[in-house]
Image (cartoon, rainbow over all chains, first blue to last red; front, top):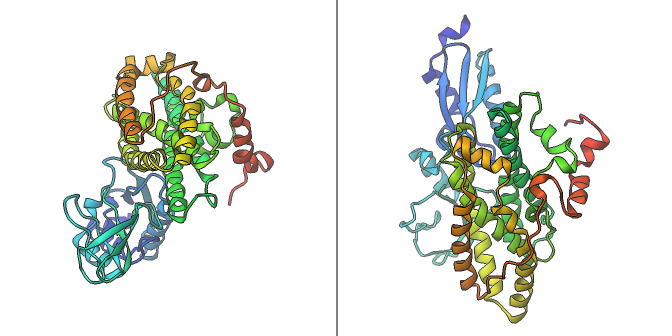
Amino acid sequence: MVNAQYTPAQIMEWLSQVPDPEIPVLTITDLGIVRDVDCSAGVTVSLTPTYSGCPATEAIEASVAATLQEHGVDDVRIKRVLSPPWTTDWISEAGRKKLTVYGIAPPERRDRPIACPRCDSSNTELVSEFGSTACKASYRCIDCLEPFEYFKCL
Amino acid sequence: MSSDATLASYASRLGDNALILGQRMIELVAASPELEEELANANFSLDYIGQARMYYTYAGEREGAGRDEDDFAFLRPEHDYKNLLLVEQPNGHYGDSTVRQFLFESWYVLLLEALTRCSDEGISIIAARAIKEVRYHLRHSSQWLVRLGDGTEESHARVKASLDDLWRYTGEMFAPDDLDDEMRAVFNGPHLEVIETQWRENVAAVLAEATLDMPDDQWMASGGKQGQHSEHMGFLLAEMQHLQRAYPGATW
């Protein structure tokens, strides 16, 4: 069995190259949606969707399979796990930094102010609870006037 | 009823509420009063359709007859849909849509909360995911209700009429039928009387903030849970199912 040569760490390394289709600056491992890698019989990757209706779910599953096949893994299985439900707490520290550089404020716990990703001021205001995707809200920086998106806590 | 049949019917009914409301909200795309609402409605609609997919997939598994999510959504006749009459009501003006969302979501959030504690893992897992989204939807519809109710004289009068008009569809949410009883007895499902008390309290608080009076309970329409729908349902299904009916098995 060829797959015996793969380790979960190796597979994770390859998966950390797979971008999220909606926020391509993040990889799927930054987002924390890869829940498990099992190499005992073929390679089974467990993924969890972010939102129930996230239209990227199928695209992500397809690119995970394609990426592993490019690396020569023939027997790839994708498992969709629903529990425990995804939370923004699973976004990695590296992922949070990448979001800020990209211009999206990373999720903050309720008591913390949302900082402007451009000038870092906390003097910001909510424009709309709903942004270009289900996971984002629209904000505006009162100091530098930058309109920006905020990745909502879930 | 076998326990598999109970779970299949119950999951399918949850899916019907989510799908039909999701379809109604899709109709608002390109017809919302402002751009932010456009995005909000499209995103909410996606949440509901995503939930419907999970419920239907699970219903298909429990039923064991080989039906998948698409069979449930696109190939069933009207009387096989068991959604509440409330969710199939037309969008009307934005006050009508807002009141419909608010009344349903106030109920759905409590139902999901109870379902996260039910003894069937398949349903409790879906409920735990869905509730995170629906809490957010409810916050949005509550804010709009307050904005319209406590807005101008005209917005107040119009949203009051919407509330009085749609109130008759709320009775069905709390009237347990055999399936509700079975779900409760066998799987520790929701206790609709308890939910009604909590619902009234929550709804009254938002209505007070919106300076709207709680309507009197008069005659309540029912039948949705038994597959007897209002005249609007057929039109909705005709549009939603058109492609699969005209070109059976079409994929892309």
